Picture 1 (cartoon, helix red, strand yellow):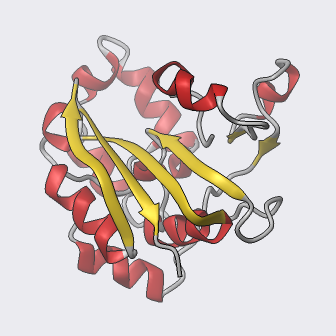
Picture 2 (spheres, helix red, strand yellow):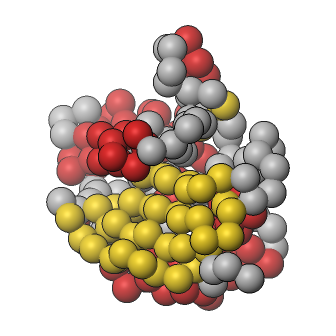
Picture 3 (cartoon, one colour):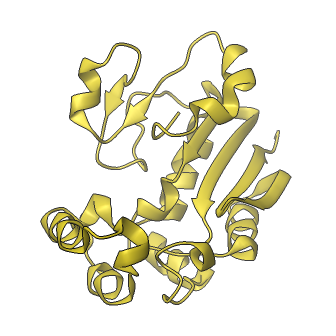
Amino acid sequence: VIGGRLRWRFGALLKTASRIINVDNCPSNLAKPGSTDHVMTDAADLFFAPDETMDFVCSSHVLEHIANPLKAIGEWKRVARDGGIIYAGVPDKRRSFDHARGRTPLSHLVDDLNRDVGQTDETHTAEFLKGCDYEMADGPRTDELLKKVRNNPISTIHHHVWVVDDVAEIFEHMGLQVIYGPVLHHGTIHIVGRKSKR
């Protein structure tokens, strides 16, 4: 489970697991029992997991924060067993503070993958700062949000923004069989892909 916001959405699935590994980017979560097993700055590097050892990889509101999403999905495929599932929940840009920003085309993501863009890449920081609807993002605390973004842009910003069709295209490009969705629910795009058996 990458990111901490989806437990309640996948309660039934998580109850079937013999073990759940929780991954987050917030070191303070390590102090909370059962909250986090591994802290890392890049969800495209699940260093702790051997190849093909996971039945599922779930992420909620994580993929948009990753500078190299295709690399991340490739890593999630690496650790998933044949027939394993990969879930992602990502915000639809039209229903978030990204609504004024342009959609990220697949060709851009392929270029990021080919250039092996890392999580410290700040390519989209200026665009985010210019296009973000701060009032929608953080209500009256606009100055506070701006300060947070400028202090830690790599984990705060949405590097990429999508609509429903984009997310399906990404999963299909990565060779995942889409078995659910993409479905838009309360501003979040939900999609489940299966790693094809060889």
